[in-house]
Image (cartoon, rainbow, N blue to C red; front, side, top):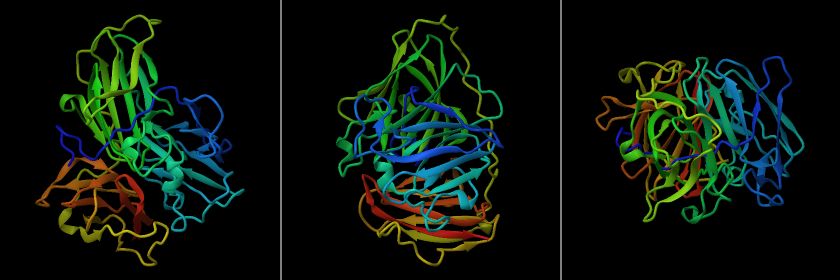
Length: 414
């Protein structure tokens, strides 16, 4: 599904650089307080808050959280809603008790109560934090989590781009696309800039296909994990709901650039890069960017010794988890998981606590990308991962464009 010519998975998640950013406290400092509140407002909108929205600290998206790899993230969720909630750190290989999945890894955070999340991320990359409830995510409970590399990355601007929708609907393909809570925002750049665009799809039921106009882009990371940089075919990229893509992008001309919503009869700009004229133009870079520093994932997966399991994507209430795990595996053993769906359209699958490789059809190799979110079509897929994170881990899924049509199961790593 994921090739250098066509990054398949569905959709593209972006957000502009005007998102509020707040530094994460260092180890030993008080925990950063994150309040889940009703009546939120979009960060790029003016006027009164909407009662239809929820937001972390009252905004949609919530503030960008930044921390360096290996530093301790300390965040206290305070529930100001009239219903239970929790925070799931999407794509982050956290300790099991920090994964935010009631009732599997913690009890729900009831109205008026709080819960402390504390962990040291092993991986640098682009991730996001969200309510575990997809209904609450659709109403605005999400934000970007950026785990910075220990090494310096040679770029002129680092832009976080979060794609979302006004509110989740049953027909999301007809809803406008918001970039960092705004319709068609503008981001200031300069001639000669090399950008790092961190793209996050917070529209959990909708995929996006995007085209970068006026830019020379290299794909640098997928779902937070570095890849050997490559030029996407015709400057187009796609991203699954919940997925992320990092791009290095050079300004190609002097007329600005735009992010276009592709795959439609008429391509429409959803964000623009405009020259601010306040800085001296930089000399244009001629060389492709180097690869991002690698994360501590295994160099290979021993498929011969893997535990083999099969998953059929049935529909049920996502909160009705089975009492027994789908399988139990010893820590450090590889897992080969076949995924099939009996009917309906494409399904979005998210694996908690681990990253996986998409296997080739002949089951004799894998695509050169680590993923944590995948769109499953009619033919099904097989994935493989090393079960190196102890605990009880969720596998959740839902139909594309129908977040309420899904379910979940879990497995145990001992």
